[in-house]
Length: 402
Image 1: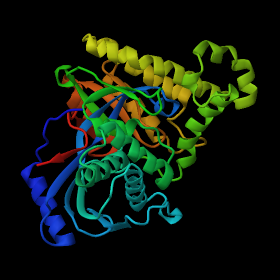
Image 2: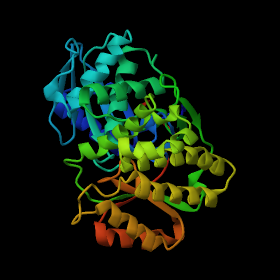
Image 3: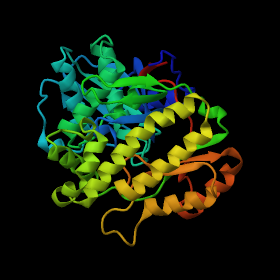
């Protein structure tokens, strides 16, 4: 939602140019960037059409691009195999589930449905949003692809929220992951935003005016080092169980059910849906109410009040949502260890919480600047060098760059 131009650092642009020339020959004609995102409030609320507070961050995926005059999109990301998709063949391909070609094909298909005549292009990509970092590298890729197609072939007619929705469609239908819309929206729109997803086709997106750089705290994302493999069922169970509670009332999502109505039905829900589903629904109602409180605290400059709400969010995710320790895991409880380290080294100051999907991802911490060196050293002594990422909020979403 910003028009601020993004200028690529000369060394990054030179690396892109060299990679493009090696992959495709000649020179790129256009450059694009899409940021990773951090979820600041609203843990697992978006898939219930709830509220979130999120921000684009200064880690991004960038691409050097040139239209190739064919019907084939060719994308090469550094360290990965070449991805090729024929834009005249846009039906989902079962063998492509969980692959980049699925995302490319799905995004091209959705743009085609909207009346865009998608053509071929060559793109060489590099990223500072590491896979599995909890900063949504997949959403950054989706927004990057959507931004490229929107610019090259659709005269930028799709708005940033529409580009986000197209990315989610590709992830859900082609890639096979039942994600919500927060990640793509935060990446596509940029800056610090609060989003209300209640109206399914037209989420309400509002910028939040607060300068984190002036808060006296560092925004840290801590990589727990856990393995994401074989956790699809754990992630899918959260929206599935919340929807099961909603379905008991004959509704699609929990936002369609008043909180007092839900609480009055808990005795019957426990026997029908199970206690974990009930606890996860309790988390949803608490967390969804917490987001506007966080926004209000930031906008009136009450950072200590905001930090208290962040801590409450973390406790709710751990106790009620239960997305910290995968079921049955005893020897490896990586996210739980990361949270314990945060509590120890913050010693009652700042705030910390599980970040994003949970289970095997990352932890977010707001660390007083005077504690940052000690905090990072303590975290990395256990989790490894580079585990603590200090980030800043980026004003631009998915954009063409110079």
